[in-house]
Image 1: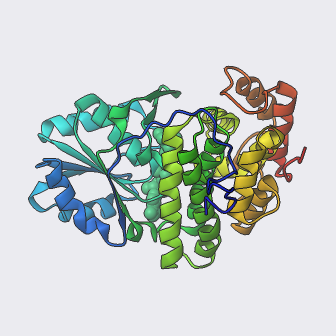
Image 2: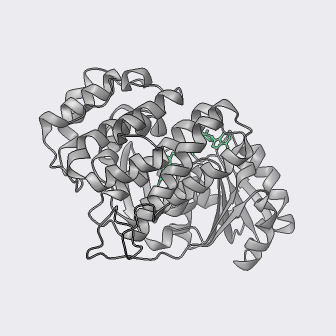
Image 3: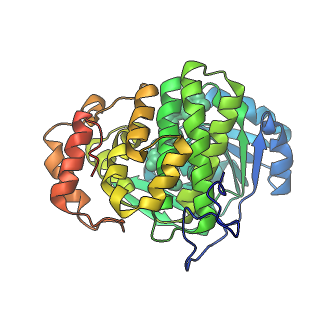
Length: 370
Ligand code: NAD
């Protein structure tokens, strides 16, 4: 796919090669159907003898089932993982780690559970294995967001990256269609912003385009038939690639807006991304034509922003922030915060335009094509 527009030398001309820096992070990824059967071997490889399985309340049973695969290595389960990684939850988990002589962590779940694994590993130095069950991508990043007293802080460290990631497609079939759709578009957002990041590079751009294409084609099939094996496989493959993009390069206006909106109004993470993304793409379109061409090509659509908007409608996702609990009075406040310490962005960030973007996203309008 990456060489569809190859020039005479066989190099993709979608992104002109110029000076770039590429940091290759070390990841061990085990991917496929039934790969959870490898859990015992992977724990052994890391020298884990007493593993603590981490889950949310909702996925406790799943965690207990997977724990049995560890045999004598299964030392217990901690099922209080919570969105935005509150420090109090991490501290409670540390007490369990210490009381049960734990020497390894196994996170089974979405970004919330993987976040808890990272927070614990950071404080204890324990090895961690992640088994992702959503498409959020946290398992591929050296990033941890934590909350104390409602205030979120984010840090980056290579020590946060799970030692092993086991992607088992079978773990994703229970993710409901709407949650799958929102989580998948959340993943696409990572790849979209990787394509126009100031630190973009040709390797990550290849992964980004491939990730968008895999998810863009798989998600509509999942919404119709959640048990579609090939679609679930392709979506998880795309989520891996998009997560790797998030971990490798800087994010821009779209991620800044979602942090502001999620943090200020306690909006659901993945759905906020799905609603804002077409508007953020439209905002940046004229300043990032190569990225737009790649997004459009990946989605088989003439226009990147409209293509994403139409995809979200096909996936039956809510179209406006008003549908997911944002108050109309929040538009001005969000615009004020969004322009403070803006992330690097291809198009300069000005308050009037950002306010207009948020207002359109609030109402669920189509993106404004410039
Ligand atoms: P989540 O982990 O909060 O999961 C949402 C709900 O879905 C939970 O109740 C969970 O138990 C349930 N669930 C997960 N997988 C399921 C499955 N297969 N079947 C049935 N139910 C399932 O949601 P998320 O969107 O994956 O993660 C959001 C969090 O992750 C946010 O806090 C976000 O900030 C963080 N995040 C961090 C990074 C990073 O790089 N640090 C990246 C992406 C997301």
